Length: 163
Length: 185
Image 1 (cartoon, each protein chain N blue to C red):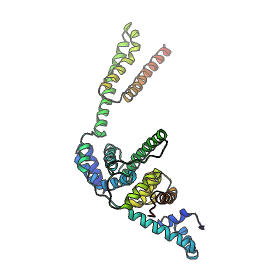
Image 2 (cartoon, chains in turn cyan, purple):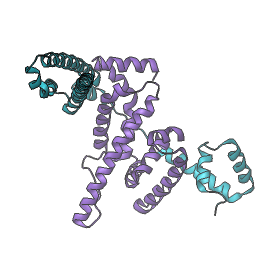
Image 3 (cartoon, chains in turn blue, orange):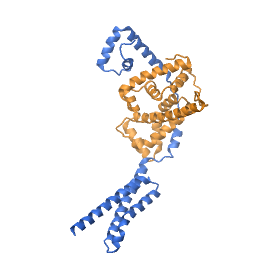
Image 4 (tube, chains in turn purple, yellow):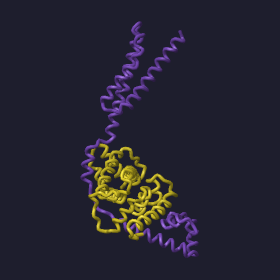
């Protein structure tokens, strides 16, 4: 039967006790033979256990490097993705501006409103072909489309209210 | 490994100079391989695991934050990889046991012959330990890591480390005395 939680003795041996706790335990160990023996036993066990872990030598450098040569790191991918995103933004902007211009033409304009979405969808499909993550591209494109649509809607509403 | 050197190696790897990664491999392969060897219990498995771990390290290099400790980051990858393997093996074992209704000891035919019988027994006994105890004991007694480092890598509170070490040793002692009749501890 030990006087403290046995885990405390483990912490003591590993030098992980706070100064005050350590001093208290050391004082106790001076008085309690049973606890002192227990600590000595754990210490010996730990030394034995450490001694059992022997290192094997190994050299896998060449094999690992060979396998690494087949992998393209993310930096290149993210550069490519960033470039696609810029193109996507630019293309969406231009095509939306074009749609806006076409809408301003009498009679034709009224027929065009659903087409606001089309350029974005086309670019999303094109990006899909560039082996990008379709979901990411589609979400980005979707957000841009919604923003542009909201902007035009807001402009039209304000125009109607003014009229 | 110095921070500046590490930064240079990571940048080299990101720029496609993959041979720079060799320096990281040379620095960590011995520790990682031996960690895997004690964790998995077979030379062949440890070799495969070491290679897979280095590929993971390489793939994730760009996400490494240079303000963090690289060694801890590396061994977090090691730990996560081995934990996945342990879970998979446990499921396999449970499935096989349910199929045959008896205990099956997994032994790979390529298991290396290690001269010291004590070491062999330790490997076998470690294999029977729950994987979190196994990892903590290897970190403590093979890697000689501090409680703080172990807690960081394992993602557990610092206070839990001591109890896991203590309980892990108790379990190990039981396995060694029960399974091999060879009082190593």
